[in-house]
Length: 365
Image 1 (cartoon, one colour):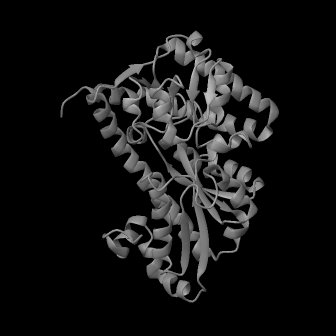
Image 2: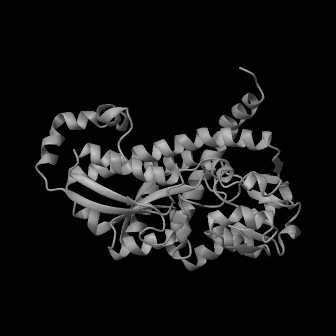
């Protein structure tokens, strides 16, 4: 896939590194042998944003290197299953993966941090913690223990709590609820409430929900949910999302493969990851707002889940997090730091941002 019509020069400027090339990076790159990597995505080719972000990443690397660093992208299921990418990177059969780290929460709870942490900070707060707080240092140490280096892959932004045939009105309504989930820590939360988490491939969710084989389903967010046809499978769309405030994607790279690169090549990888992540997040912010409006216009009823329901889920999550802390020192240390950061951000937001957003939401230009 060729780089869009903006051209290489504009792309480099957008990535913020044109000045670096001007200082002499390009000649050094051309003196190097061609490096060839393979990257496996956990997303199918039909996922224009998810899979597309991986393509954007490798295009930028290719442009920065003048074609001397070539990364072949493989969609989910081509080289291995979408969830097989972690083993493949750690085992060295591929050099990198573009995935949702939180899907591997069952391997280690810290995979969920920055990716799909229930009641966690939003994408902007997570980015602040990672870049200006203690997040990058703490998470780098965790990933090093896994033989990996993790780079930001962007966020899906706006989240809902899922599609329901009948929306829960109290904690008791979760008992026996057959709920399709994306996995991660929320499986443990739902099980604690008496729900029965279901594993279904994305392509089978709408049919199972429409035919009553499941009672509720959660996927990714308005844009992706609309693309799957979930708006015609169930009448109720729950707000707000408790699973995560923006599903965080990541580029997982084998530590040995990254260490074998030159400093110039590592800089290209980091710059390309930052730019592709920013583009993915921006695209989701635009698409989700449009999709939510279209779903409502087509008859979807957006329902705000009552406070007792939200409190019940939060209490269950608190218990799950405490259990992880008792069993895992890494989780206890990293999650405690993130929660302290989130509380401080929340206090500032309550005084400024959230009040302004609430005021402006119903105002005409």
